[in-house]
Image (cartoon, rainbow, N blue to C red; front, side, top):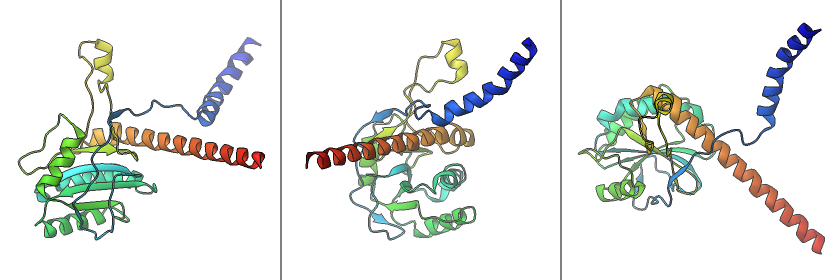
Amino acid sequence: MKKKIILGVLFLLPIAIVLVLLFTKHNYTPLPVIKTNVPEIVNYESFEKKDTIQFESKITILGFLGGNVKDRKINVLNLNQKIYKRFSGFKHFQIVMLITSGQEEEVKSLKYEISRFADELKSWNFVVVDETELVRIFNGLESPLVLDGYNSSDYVYIIDKDRNLRGRFDDRSKVELREEVVKPYMLYGYNTISISELSGKMTDDIRILFQQSRTASEKDESQKRREEVIKVDKK
């Protein structure tokens, strides 16, 4: 009898865990807001000739290629393989790469390389700005990371639909947390040279942000329905 009970528990426990995960909406830790009110792009030209490119109402991966598109090829291809191909199907997802003028041939070559590994490029945006505009947007992130002499960087940033910079307040590894030697440090941007960081931390954080966005949308819809019912009842 005791053996049957143990076998029953072992059989039912995994099923119970799966059911809890399926029906629990908030089984994740929200991705923190690191900086609010990230500056919107103002003076720009879309390389793809799109009418409007804005951060508002989009989940944006923002990168800075500056005047060094040619030497940032590996960064972009890593981002394409590990991030773009996973999330390009989401309606409000976009990647925005800020570049300075005079690099048309380099961008064409880079987009050709991307197209070899992606079915479509609709959410890739190469945005031409002058140095002043690029630095203005970068400074608005208030990141401790820096741009190089070409106003370029290995790091990309996650910006939510409300133009908030998302990241981590405590980016310590499991080993660092266990040893309690290293003090907490923040994660502002994600290193596109590091495959493990893109496929690990960044992928997890974007998934969480989409889940948060979905949950918020469901709450808004529920509130609208309640307000409509109240209006009908009052008539």
